[in-house]
Image (cartoon, rainbow, N blue to C red; front, top):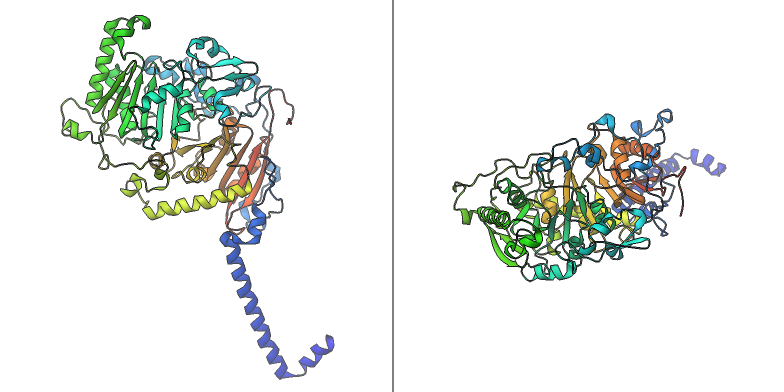
Length: 612
């Protein structure tokens, strides 16, 4: 080879030829690697397939360990080990079922009027716990749906009071090491199925017209549990009161529910959210306060939607003795309800036994004549601006698209939502919405490669902490799971769009604790959440709250900028979470990354992580 090189140097013509060949080869190689890089970034490259592969053996998310994103990003992405987060200690066993914003002792310091003491009252910053909530001894993974609808392990919610208090109403029974839920309720002791059949003879429950439902004062949420097989998703709520753990039982069963109450504050849902609202002996004084509570239901009820009232005062003439209430009081209560319903342009379409059904007219103004109708006080505030806003005695005015027809579910899921079609969401066109859908289908496909059991039924209760238009939930849609779509109060207000798709969700500020019990979600997803809250509250507080509501061996998927996720990863590593940071599905040069985590299994008294 050396001789050849020497000969080349002695021949100027050959040198020029070699230079031309060299340039041609260099240009060719540049073109080849450019095309190769573009192919890999498209998501079809072999490198991406390897980066996204995981083991198929369960929820431990053993991601291939050869990811090396640090070489592509400098600056804040490098962590100073001297500032390593100190490991978080377990909280005392007395906090096993701690609900920070619904703490019983704190609640008793607030007024009883309008149920104010049962509303959200969160601890100030200096009183927030900086420890990890333990699971009770013997805690096990809940049964898979649909078995979980009927059975809950006793160790997960060891409270027997309801088995005695509600024994004749068939709510719940204790059998060995499990609770059994026969499907009964105060107004349907013979079972929720028969009760729903009665409602379905009047309300189009089975054809997709009714998709989203609200159950006020839900008990253990059997109504919502049995609606699920009819493709109706129900948002249930009840206060944390003397009916200990009713919402906890609902979530252990795999039914959407939150701790909440109709009190002095507006419900954390957008206007025109629900196709049906329901009260089965929920003890809400509908006929008092000048109809304030019915007006709030009207705000969240879609035009054409249905309101079901089962129990007192309906059919009071035949029941006042068994209810042990004066018939004059019951008569007045029903009269007040009928008057408010007329004011709201609700038409009673059925009254049978102790159950009455009203339907909200599709165009309320056609019944009132005009917004100047006498006796009608219209609300002036944005009907979707509700976080910690006082409930008012006013009627939510109809909007220009009030009489829009909603497509039946599941067609509704991927159709253009009315709020998008009408331009009601600033800066969001139909094309932008459709592109968001496409992106989330791509993201979720990548997640399924990261965690192959994501849609297997292992994860029933799923939360999206920053839901946007609900694209994550839509891409995951399955009868095996449901998603609580949370729209942060700091984000664009898109919750109405989510409901128009036939999904459910709630407003929330992640600087505070969520209105749920510990260990109620199997999988938590968040896109851009920590960037959103970067200068608003401590990442540590958000992560501790995520740990509180996540089940042992539950999973977390976070999508955010790499610098932000590095900070999150350092905190999560001190929380008994196993974590892996992964490249974006489009390749390692994308600054956005994916952090996946699994919460380790440990219980009260564990000095270290335990295994089963």
